[in-house]
Amino acid sequence: MTVTTLVSGRPASAREAAIWSALQQEAAPAGVHQHTALILEGLADGKLAAADLPPELEIKRIAPGCFCCIGNLTLRVTLNRLLRKAPARLFISIADDTHLSQIRAFLSQPPYDAYLSLTPDLTV
Image (cartoon, rainbow, N blue to C red; front, top):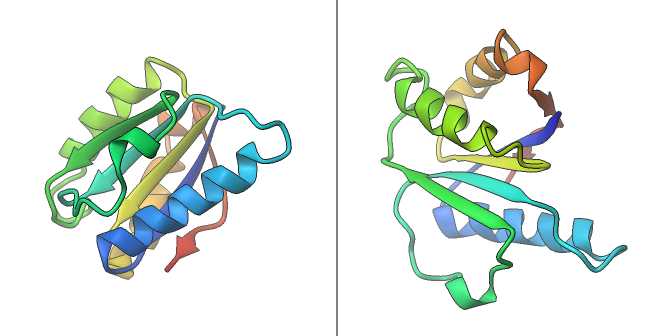
């Protein structure tokens, strides 16, 4: 099972900083990063330097827009590709938390319920 956290809030840099902080806390006890995937809504703002990121981190960016309202197609395709590699950890960064409960429900249904273990949401 991939441990999955939904991260919401604005701006994108705050969400990414919260994810990075969570990753640092998880890696601290063992000093090792596990294979982690990030699905980030929106474009990079350049606040996190790629050189500072661990090689175990796979980042996919999705154009801004509500995952619910666009029918989850982009999220589904990206998520399916990432899950083929069976990451231990997954963060999904969402700008608007208006439909967070619908996205959580979508990820809790088949087939994703067999692959994802949802944690409490992280709001910044």
